[in-house]
Image 1 (tube, rainbow, N blue to C red):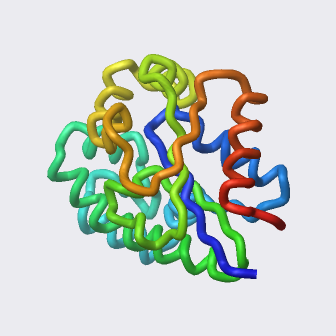
Image 2 (cartoon, one colour):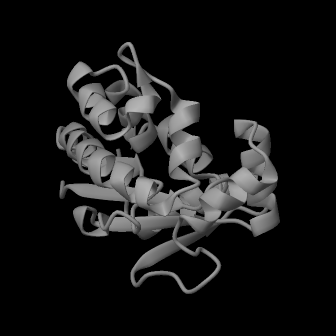
Length: 193
């Protein structure tokens, strides 16, 4: 069987995790940048690097995620500094983990922002109406409307044209609708487990 690496991406609150979970429930190996990032938060070497870049955000070997988020989403230079440090390390570990299986699906929130689309054979973009995304992210993360809008501004503009070769998946309906979209993508990419 030919190896296939598939990225699921999309804006904050679009439903990337739900689509990834649907694929996981169908037996596909699913990986996540967010899961890799959470593991790195407990890695001493990684935290030392973060501490050097953001000394007020790492205290006694523990990352203050709220302080780091506040800092990087209020200052674009600080966000770029974090992305330049974190993204390569997250992607290196993600791609290493994915290398062990022939068909691997990964949830990659900042795929285009980080320039990592070329690391995957296919890209699936979960699209959802902006107001629904805003509401979902506020409810899920306990963020204010402005905090979510700040994150949206820092991401790829999913309201505009999609990158070439990107497979769109609409998530404006029910879970069952999204499951049908997963079936469509599975058939399109000839995914079998």
